[in-house]
Every structure is written in structure tokens, then in C-alpha cells.
Image 1 (cartoon, each protein chain N blue to C red):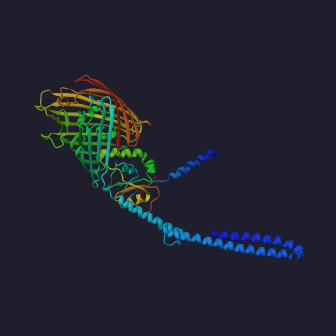
Image 2 (image 1 turned 180 degrees about the vertical axis):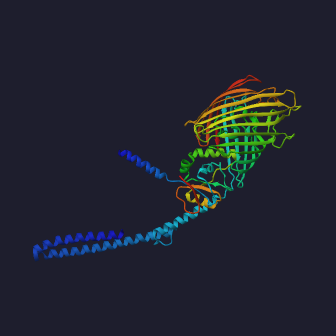
Image 3 (image 1 turned 135 degrees about the vertical axis):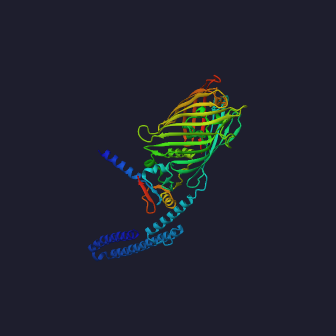
Length: 445
Length: 129
């Protein structure tokens, strides 16, 4: 390209000079010898022009030489190649090879997954009545929840969840909510040992203490955790096997568990982390089917039950055989999150003569994933026999019904604001009715 | 008529620009294409006796999520958040480029990932989308 530019310059100048020469010589011939002086002058001009061409050509060559010298010097400075004259493809291949080596080394480093993932959730809020303790009002600190899922061997699994929560007196407590170590027998079976969320219904295992994961502002009252007003054992310390083998176009979801029978201590269910005094067990299970195709894709239907001997710390202590069973339905799709759960109780008084008591509880929640948020509506109801020692001994063992309308706005991928307006009517121990306006700001990290 | 032709050409060019996604696994992995989704959402952890070790590839993730998982990135992340606290499972580690993903799959027993360029030897192509 550079060589071509020199040739082109030379040829153009030559053509101009030739033209000038022709123009100059025609008049000279016409005027013959009298104009010899003029011809001599023209000859001098031609010589000068040829000399100028020669100088220009040399100057161009000199500039080209300088430019290629600078390019040759720059290549080693960049450290890409010590041979500036190497063909272009060879240099590209070398760079590509180096890049691949770097990426391979990086991938090898990244394979060393020795860190332990730490995740967490937190929420704060304000309300006309506290969502857990309706006697309180104003601003409140919710939960600060951490869960750890350390990477173990090929089949080992572990999950620990620690929750910091504020009690009715404002004191901060830390609970080890889950401490379960598992072994994955196969894709369809994992065995867990430790403290886990008792597998019944949908909410108790699908959600946990982090408020962000729940589209609604709070769980149904009777399904709250034990120290937050729940009346069903939300945690069990024991052994749990779970899995979801594919059957047809869907999956069968099964759970079976056995653990320490809970005890009611000072009006609150306790899951007996260290074992119980009498060796009584809770035994339970859940069986459901998730439809993965067709018109009912996203629908899960299931049943659940548990049986336990649960006493309290009254003097003399009461002992009740608690037999709970029921069903649940979940319709979880891109648009809908609809949940319904029913619990029936046939409890037998083992320490007295009051016989068998029947109670029930349940809720229905409809949620819709709109582009701007998730509006939801929920109705929950409990009808608990107060002659049943199991409910009578619990501070929250009263009957009630509650209607709630709520809204969730996702501010970002990890932050949500929720609003709820709820009306609660207590129906046995007292007839108190109250309306709650609640706001919650929940995050995950 | 000309605008129709133009639209068709534009659509074809966009489709070509989206490119193919190759799901690749370590040579020791025998996996069916129908299992890929379950592998990347943590529902399938074993192929025979081999423990699967999927890895995401951020360079190809958008195309993979759209074509294979039928999810967007936000839903995929939320799905793993829920999966993690329910089952104690961890989301796949993330590689930054095709070359890193291929290197990971080659070096990791049970390793699986996805790339935008047809891979050279040393990995098994489970499916192309």
C-alpha cells in the first residue's frame, strides 16, 4: 500500500512534467532558433522539477522507514511477541492459546469450592397491631434469619437456620430453628437427622422464618411457629425421609418422619431438642402429587397426618394423644399462588377422663402475580375444643377467624414491601375483635 | 411486500444472532436431554452412580434460561433461593466464559454446563438447542 503511494506520486509528477515539456517544446519549434534562450530556461526548470521529485521521493521513503521502525519497536513493548516480523495468524494463535490457559487456570481455581454459602433474610415494619402480638402497636423489628448450606461430600447435605427474633417483651432471642444433616440416598430419597420443619401441609416446609420468601405478610395464625402463636408442632427433632420420584408427567412427593414428642411448657409448644423425659414419639407423614403437565400443571394435591403423645408442665401434668390429619392443595404457576390447607384433630385425653375431642383449622389463600405486585386474599378459621387439654394448655389455643387482604410489591430482586389489612375475631376464650393495618419491609441477602 | 420481506429478514437475522446453546457434560456422564432441566434446578443429582455437578456459564446463561429452562434470570435465582432453604441444596457455581465452562466440565467428574460455541473434543454434547 505504501509502495503503491510512491509509484503513484512519481507517475503523476512524471506525467505533469511530460505535459509541461510538450507544451514547452511546441512553441519552441515554432519560434525556431530565436527562442533558444527560452528553451534553455525551460530546460533548467525541468532539471529543477526532476530534482524536486527526487527529493520528495527520498523524503517519503525516509518517513516510511521511520514509521515501520516505530511499529517494530512497539510490538516487543506490548509483550505479545518477540518476533515483530511473525505472520499475523501465528501471533493470533499464540494470544488465543495464552487466553485459553488463563481461563483453564481460572476454572481450576474456581473448582475449589471451600467457602460456605451464607444466606439470610430480614424484615421490619409498622402496624396498628403487631402481627404476632396484637396487644402491641407501632414499629417493630421482625426476624433476622440466617441459613447455612455447607457443601459436603457427594451425598452429604446440611442445613442450619438461625433466627434472631423479638419477643412480646421486646427481648431479643436467638433460636437454632433448623439443624439438619442429611444423606442423599438417591434422587428420590434423602434422609435427614436433626431438627427440621415438620412436613405437613404446604406452608410449613415451603416457607421458613425469612419473611421475604412469603408473598403474604405473615403465615396463617395457627400455623405460625411455636413461639409466635402456632398451635401445631412446626418443628420436630428426629429422623425424616423425603423425596419426589417422577410418576407419569408429575411427581409423587412423600415424607415420613419420627421424632421426639413435643411438650407444652408454660403455654408454648416445645420441640424437645435434647429429648423428652418419657421417650414418647411423634410419627407422621405427607403424601402429595404435583401435576407437571396439562390443564392442571402446577397443581399439588396431598394429605398429611401425625400422631403424638403431648403433655404439658401443669401439676399434675396432662397427657394427650394428638392425632391430626387433613389435606392440602396448592396451585402454583406463573400467575397464581393459591393455597388451601385443612387440619382435623381427634385428640384423646390420656391423663383424665374427658374422652376424645374434635377440632379443626384451615385456611384458603388466593394470590395473583401481576406485573406490578402480588395481591392476595386469605381467610383462616380455627375451631378448637377448649375441653381438649392440648389446646387448653396452649396460650394461643383459642378459636378465631380472620379475613385479610394484602399486597406485595417487589422493589428489586431482593427487597419487597408488603401491606396487609386484616380483621380478626376471637370466638371462644374471648370475643375480642380487632383490625390490623400492617406494613412490612423484607429483604434477602 | 417489501416491508414483509424486510421483517422476515430481520427476524431471521435476530434468530441467527441468538445462536445455539450446547449442553455439555464430562465424558463420564450419561445424561438424557430430558433430564437437563431437573439437573439445573437441583431435582436430579445423580446420573447412574455419578454425582452430577452442574455449573452455570454467565456468557451463555441468558440463552440457556430462555431456550432450555423457560425462565428468566430473576425466576431462576428465586427458584434456587427457595430450593436452597427447603432442601439444603446449593445453586450451581458460575463460570464466566465458554472456555471456563468447558475447562470446568473437562476437569470435574459429573460436571455439566452449557456453551454457545460448538465444543471441541473432551466433553459430551448432551443436547443442542
